[in-house]
Image (cartoon, helix red, strand yellow):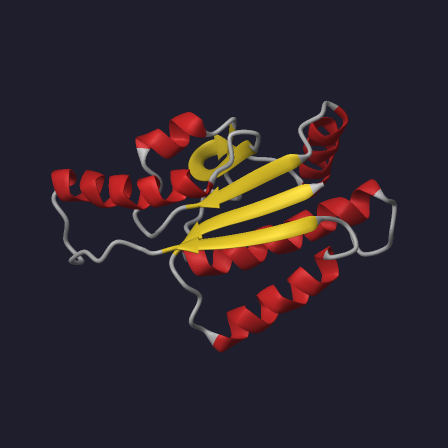
Amino acid sequence: MNIHIISVGKIKEKYLKQGLAEFEKRLRPYCKLKIDEVADEQAPEQLSEKELIQVKQKEGERILQKIKQTEYVIALDLQGVQWSSEQLAKEMDKLATSGKSSIAFVIGGSNGLSEEVLKRANKKLSFSNMTFPHQLMKLILMEQVYRAFKILRNEPYHK
């Protein structure tokens, strides 16, 4: 299976880089992992509605350039469905057995995802009603993808 993670912004924090490197290593036996980081749009803290839309559109254009036409896209979005770890594993398995072996997970920036990216998504997934920093979300996502593979193979890790 091919897993493609597309996220807005560069990871700067050392502890997050270490965590991401660890899960990249753990995922190698299970999938071909590709990670793309697109630049976040520089913007003032307080944005008008129009400016907010423009920022999301610019980031969205960068995201859409990274998505392959053949990829099944799962956008992380607060309005999305919430799955358990077992449900994520089951959905990934269903996709693989139905010929959709390339999954792109998309993580937006601090302002969220553009309408264009959300329209391109095949599924919108929410990890929680809580708000998480998008950099931390990448680590959480990678851990959950790893957990899903462990569940599918009945290997110890998931409890």
